[in-house]
Length: 202
Image 1 (cartoon, helix red, strand yellow):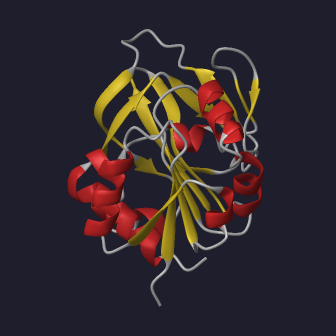
Image 2 (spheres, rainbow, N blue to C red; image 1 turned 135 degrees about the horizontal axis):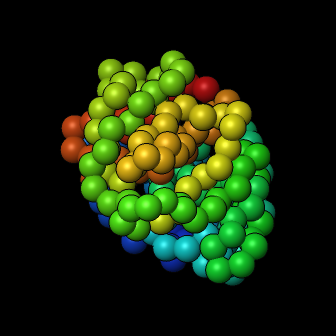
Image 3 (tube, rainbow, N blue to C red; image 1 turned 90 degrees about the horizontal axis):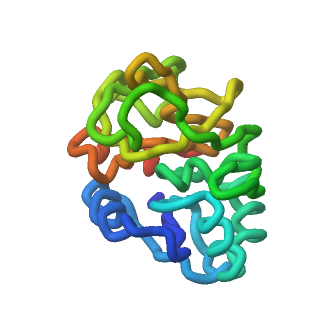
């Protein structure tokens, strides 16, 4: 059975076309979701995102997607990418305090390290617990571009080192996944990650 994957289009999805191409290359069937009614007609969800936590939540609310998406991620396999992972958290502190989608009990804070910010380029992802998401691509390199990080201690799937700092690079809570990196920019490893998400049965 082929699942329809809904990709959320909410004004912060600057990488949406690259994600569509990568997911299709991985064998997925996609539907671009612009309205809350369309969320009920998809089997899985991808939340992309480039920009700030505050603006992302504002866009979701102004497009009337926020409340429905908050409920749907509780019951449908969901993958948040970069900012899409960050807004799965309960609260973010980018340009003020903003409530997130509350999929995971986490905060989004600025990366306070003695190194160049944003953290940008390919870096190794160190998987710390088994998950289908990283099947066959454990400890591979993925492409990062971010200045903020998800602070979470319970749902960590992988970590990544930047300078002397270890940060959460992916999370999993049941059917809910998040990756701080951009799989759509991560070559074959990224395609495999999308394929793994497509094959995830929940």
